[in-house]
Image (cartoon, rainbow, N blue to C red; front, side, top):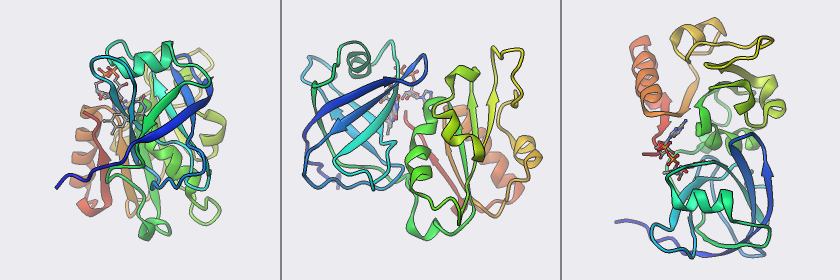
Length: 229
Ligand SMILES: Cc1cc2nc3c(=O)[nH]c(=O)nc-3n(C[C@H](O)[C@H](O)[C@H](O)COP(=O)(O)OP(=O)(O)OC[C@H]3O[C@@H](n4cnc5c(N)ncnc54)[C@H](O)[C@@H]3O)c2cc1C
């Protein structure tokens, strides 16, 4: 049976252009209870005609009370995303659900080695996971693939834990990786293949990586992925 999620009002209290294509929206939901597990997403409803619901992943941590942050990449097709990027303002009201979905960091993984693998805007579920981890006790390893260096979201925050790979249009002073994320790249950076692997990104990237990891002997229980389509 599909779970019914209550929807309630939230207001936009800040909008920050973090990269040329990604804006971070802060939604204040007041004093009410709001529950989510790092990695989960919400439905966001707008009072616009036609398709008026979008799914977006929470990037702030559950310890941030009273608000959630969403990092949303611009779109040419999706009416809710287009409205948020082009028409929403500070003070705009939206309707949201609490956290949903099964792609999250389970409590029992918190003390196990963790490898995050992200393609593009697929970084979002890892941000709330990353922000919730005790990084002194259990530093994660992050592989983050983007088209160009300018597309890296929260670069400074992620940098100490990340291998960035810019697959197109690199600046001449780019010193990061340039290949797609694959087994070779994981091996080059001494990835712990006993770790839990969390993967989110374009369909083909997920399919290729899941196959490579399975063929390499990583048990399927340790390969977690999120498909948005
Ligand atoms: C559960 C869920 C969570 C989502 N969370 C976010 C979010 O945090 N931020 C955000 O900007 N959008 C997110 N989306 C996508 C968003 O809801 C819209 O689908 C998106 O804005 C549509 O953009 P588009 O038309 O340009 O998609 P297209 O570019 O046409 O892409 C088609 C589909 O593939 C997905 N996709 C494309 N590239 C990637 C990638 N690198 N990694 C993962 N998926 C990809 C798109 O999200 C979309 O669903 C999420 C979607 C779902 C279902």
